[in-house]
Image 1 (tube, rainbow, N blue to C red):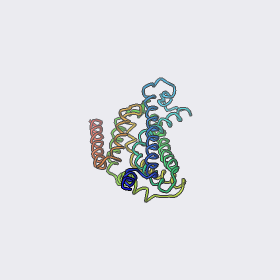
Image 2: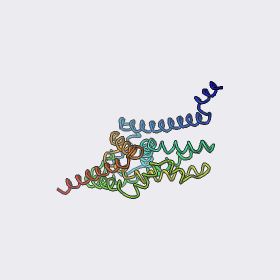
Image 3: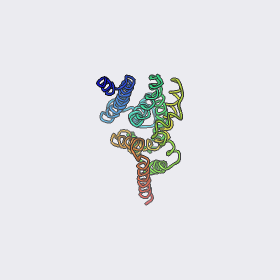
Image 4: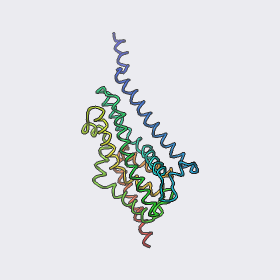
Length: 264
């Protein structure tokens, strides 16, 4: 009997094994999706001569329908690449709760809604790209050609780091269990609404940092990776709020330097 007790003590319950396996598969799937999106970004940044890359870098603001779709697709896949890794703890916590209530498939609904929010955000980013290009404030590589635009984007992003809206949205993103318990809804429709709400909070947290893509350009992989890392650090790292504040101070300083150079 002691031996049997010892054997059973060393084994995980079947439900726990199923939970760990399911979470591992979901995490791998999300990271794989993010990696595929990153590979797409690498592809268009490295081989800019291929037709699709050319569509994402229109030489003028006279866009065709194919141009609009290509630019939107680029932004949408870039948002998925940048934001999915930082959303992984929230998604896994949600799936954990769903497994306990025997509603495992709700995770797909949650992730789909989260991505839809960022895809809608990409519509706005596409419109902003067209408008800035029409004003000759960005070049076809979507890099700012206006010192004033660069300074304003840096200052806006820096000041927003200290705003109340930013802090509220960031606090929800940093506490998955608190968000999920407070926003819990039943059924796949409920999971979809929860995914939408988390996506909106995520946009509220990160939109100003995403606007900085117009400073360094969306073909600059190092710049995209740096912004993605900044988002992940302030969401996931211990003391991420303080690191976010330091980032805000750095952005404000950079913006003020740009303004001083502009007025001299």
